[in-house]
Amino acid sequence: MLFTLYCLVPSYWARNRSKKIIRTGSPLNKEVALTFDDGPNPEYTPRLLDILKEYQVPASFFCLGRQAALYPDIIKRIAREGHIIGCHSYSHRHAWLMPPFYTMRDIKRTYETITRITGNPPKWYRPPWGHFNAVSIYAAKRLNLNIALWSVEARDWALDTTPEYIYNIVIDKCDKGSIIVLHDNRGTSGAPVKALRALPYIISSLHEKGYKFVTLDRMKEALNA
Ligand SMILES: [Zn+2]
Image 1: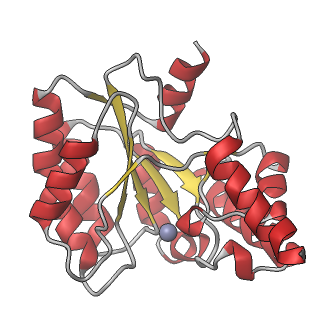
Image 2: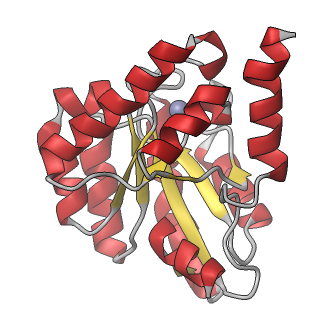
């Protein structure tokens, strides 16, 4: 019963019912958002930033507080190059395994770590695996964090995934307002390389189809317009 109230109900509500939690942008605009979870990573994130710079595409990064503390210069570069930095928890613990006090502390610690490095408080939160508990939703609200999930994922973290698979899934599923999630850290060994290989093709193909890449800030603005 407690598990249902603390974990299942908040997760179900957030993922399916809440009108405030963003899962897609406006279906009227030919805009998509690229989001990257779990970083920063000293090997992959700079390469990812190089690609985004080359194609002049903005993205939104859901960073781990632990990684941010280890690699503050990469966090600064993400911010400097005009991308959004959001909180993705401190050390990627599942919301269903975290007691209330720990949940609050985990989100706050991530928020404070990012704020300390960039000088700006983050405005976005996405929990690991898109799972919530009752306190994580409350904590995000108290810290004025907008919550964003995603609508397109391509199993880029999995062992058997190839860059071609990632490309095909993203291009196949992308629609107006899609929020694409990829990863620049964690997953199976070397997994982010596959997303990095697919990314230039994904960007070029979506550009050719007339899509514009936007940050989650812009997507939220368009939803409220
Ligand atoms: Zn994650």
